[in-house]
Image (cartoon, rainbow, N blue to C red; front, side):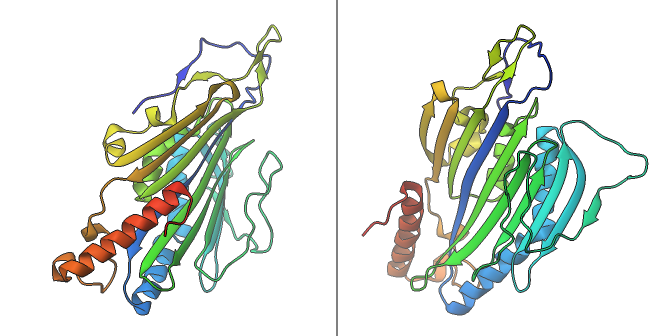
Length: 292
């Protein structure tokens, strides 16, 4: 994995207040033939990515990017969904009176607000299983929202995770890319990275970016990239970077859920039809349009 290469050492007048924002949508697609299997899929996703599991994922992201957890608040919804907030800091802060992270129950109705003043979690539920996770750095945040759903007619089920990691100072979110793509087993990923604002060196000169980057893809492991079709769009003068990934192969063995017959047990014509539906779903998500 490529590590962030900083520019020559900067001497700043104060805190490095560049904001580095990484946001992406990850989609996992599967096939569940019957209504019971579709409902089982929603239940499986709700259990697999409940508040405890999402807290584990964000805790690992925090470790990877080099931040420290201050406290944790989490809430599972009834019947489905969850909310989690993790306060984290760029520095390793140890308080004698707090050996472990404090855990609080967050009210569902109250949106969480990050250090930058933005509202990060809407605290609402929906007709499908939905989970919300927000982690705050001392001046920034990490948030995850999950949305499992299924097609009403043709057996396609889709799990979406919207993730944003916004950091200030030396901490950078780019190092969490590989972990999150693998952890959520994405068939499609749409990723944006932007460095916003500026900080000043000791002479008063504004610094708009403090590290070298040509493409988000440079920070994704080659074994991951080899499995995907890629599109890359970068606006260097705006410090804005965008990439999209779509899985190349549709192997039914990894897409059939629950009681749906294994690939070998399905008639050949049905296998072709299911594979066609899966490929169409993945391509529509990747290109953001419906195909006839």
